[in-house]
Length: 235
Image 1: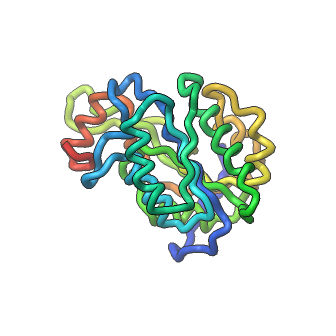
Image 2: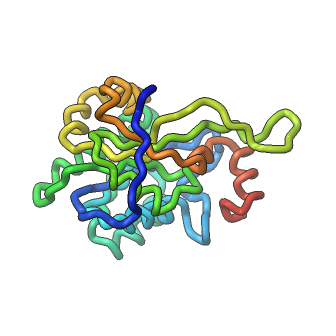
């Protein structure tokens, strides 16, 4: 991914030619509880993040959730009653990985025939410091792929004093040309998702919006406790 262009954009809302796919069917096995139901500002993460997507004024929002979770289903369906653009898709095989969730999201979009979608914003639900300006910045990009740039993190250093960041990441949230995404759909298997497909593109077709706050996602109990300590999640 070396050589990707870094873009500087106005944070003014763009004309709505996009849809959103929210990947929220993970089983949170390392965390030990459903991350979709962790709370931020008084509401479940899945609903909080879907509201961020709504704020970008998309033509459609596909939310992919796991099977057999009435609490997750209830949390998102309450919001879908308010916003007709939201469509909930159930992943019957969430253990197969994120790529299958994305496959289902693309499939749901192609089944909606009355839309004029040019690009798709793809996002998860556990980057707890994600905000609307970052999503607007991604949507303002013009390349075939406009991805987020950040680092991974490992909670605390050995002295237990600060969060440890490592390894550059080009990943979600990302905005991808819809026709390109549909061509990629058949290759989305298991955990082999977007990253290797994005890397296969020439650098001229990719840009990144850097946001260090996106480093903080929630995969482990330690990361969750740290986020709650910092006030990023509700206790």
